[in-house]
Image (tube, rainbow, N blue to C red; front, side, top):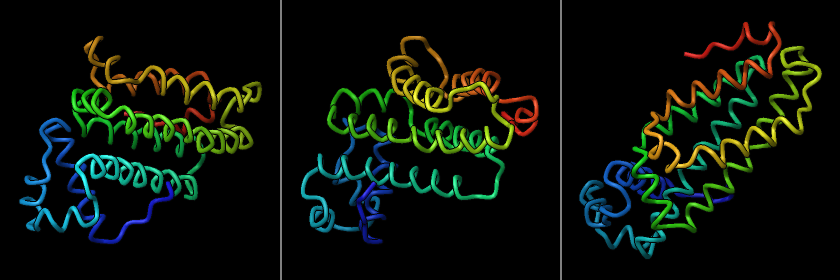
Length: 201
């Protein structure tokens, strides 16, 4: 993500995202946010002139936090199999912080913002490709796996299946569903040696 925010903007956006996660975009108000932050609405509107702009930038800010985490894990000294699992665990932990009904409401009421999320998800394909390639070169992913195809399939399955309505219609818990999916994927990708490094709680 290319957006750069000042410390005050980050404070507003972080609290805005947390507030939206708790009450949903329908009930979210700039008045309530200003009260929570102890600042005037005028100050918030100086940076974000409308509620819609604030909601969009709040989501963009959250995605930038996720992107930084991805970069940090990719650059870490963890073995590549552990990197793969840590990223998936991070995604699942972030997802369960926001009730799925809130996500569904965002998708319906702000389709343009939802498309930002979709594009962000798809852009993570290169992250997973790099990690899986590294894992294959280390003998942790099966040699016969086409990494280009696997990374593309993986990220598109997530993007097209893990939608708010999927969890709501099937009455599925987000984290438990994610763990089951992760176990299925790692079981098919990793070698016995790689699976030794894959610890999924």
